[in-house]
Length: 263
Image 1 (cartoon, rainbow, N blue to C red):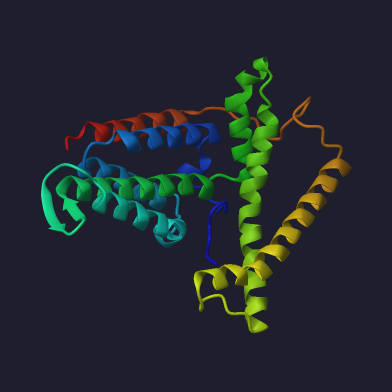
Image 2: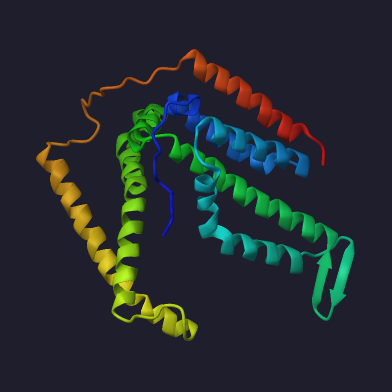
């Protein structure tokens, strides 16, 4: 399984050196702009911006696009639903109960592009930001909510641990699948019910392994006297620099251009 979700690729590029809070905020703005774009020109600008950012960060495009592979079924299902079940507009094809309209095709293309851009943007964030930096950035951004009793540190820690263990559990599942295939297991033939039952020998040991790793992590944190975010110090103090200001300005201009471009 070539899943890179949650993995971090170290580097010294400009994108790697940005403050994690800057990258989190810019990713959030990018997500909002993806839903505000009104035409293919705007999506082309956002797509080109992500590709240029990936090239600057020395992340291979093949590695970046691997994140799209797991959601291809969702993209295909979204396209089919928008093409065949859209109502109203200019009819292009009508056969029996199936009606394909121009607006349905355009909306399906918009939805597919939105899903792809969302995955690529968030994937670029995790590839260029270490889990520890992400945790610190999230905690600092949510720290004002502590005044109302919001557990900012605990939530950031849980998200960091979840991202950290996605590649580990993926590798564990890959090993279990190969071991079961070596014993003669068949996961690809038969009916849907039969294939679902064939997944049980994978899911059971995977859940057992996940619970064991969680227990070991809890014991390790307890042995190191972990007590949450209270009186916790950090080796690296987050500070905004001129580089972050330039990133905000440049990204803001590009995203504003993508949203401003007409249909």
